[in-house]
View 1: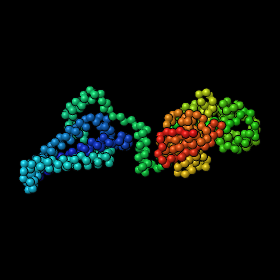
View 2 (view 1 turned 120 degrees about the vertical axis):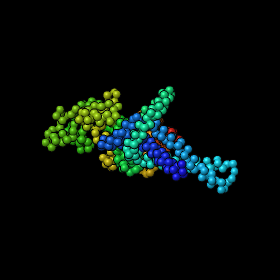
View 3 (view 1 turned 135 degrees about the vertical axis):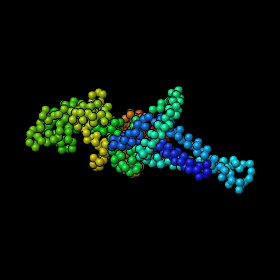
View 4 (view 1 turned 180 degrees about the vertical axis):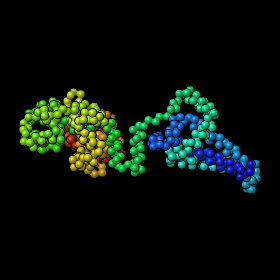
Length: 439
């Protein structure tokens, strides 16, 4: 064959190899979620791609047959076509025993470079840009190619399957989506500007509902305002005026003897109608939802949905009331400052770029968000910042007790009757050990 004919054949081989490389990366990289959306919108080729991904052995066998055959044939033709011309070129500058070897090396380098550049590298990079679109575009011709190569592909796959079976290799593709996968997609969306910062924050908080327990968002026992059955009218009026709550617990004598709850709206109606409040009765007391403190916020949402309630009492394993929680508390956990007035949210006060005043009752998840900490040690052992200090110090903390974790120093500022009221958290400028305690 003439040089022109060889060049035409080599170009066709490069195009064929590039097509197979493009197809291989596109079909492997096409995302199942996007393909399903396209298939549901009526794109039949998207469903064909999904089916091929499930049974990909025939395609990869056919692809490797084609690519290796093209590479071998291209090498043979290229060496035969270009070697004489390179030998002639070398003869002009060098006349010796290595002339043929140099000509072979130059022709080999030229053909290999052409195939690497145009049949491998560039097609694969193009396929990574839009794998779904390219996979849909090439699915019909590649299916014809698979049928053509099927006899040899079946033989090769049989040998491969036998080897995998001997070495007990699982070849099934795992398409399960984990939280880490979704989190990575959200991070990528935030970096690309598709998700705004607050939207990214909301989505992260929604997923955290499955991990955060009820105590992390409830109103703790010491902050619960409640009425007793013998509460005086003056006391009821004073609590209504002093505390901006819509619901109040009703207890027999103390907080652990819960009877139900009253809605502030019902009491205000009685006041407006000049009715007596000397005794709370069945017309105003409602049944209250009682839940264990081991529930997650996600499970509590299901309880609220099934019971049609928005208010619950949280008890521990000893049947003691540890707090109350409302649907609004869960929404505040998700939305943060967007539903909580800034002047009312005093749990975390930023003093400057490197220090914060934080209440001991602050949930660990809220503290992690504020300080941009990814993970705290042994998080399952405590719910609040005060719990973290007690867990690390292994004692009841006193003012000036300090724990250093990572790049942060946690110092107890105020303690009231063994309860940690406030801590000063400082970001350290110098690198510190992972864990250290001081008194």
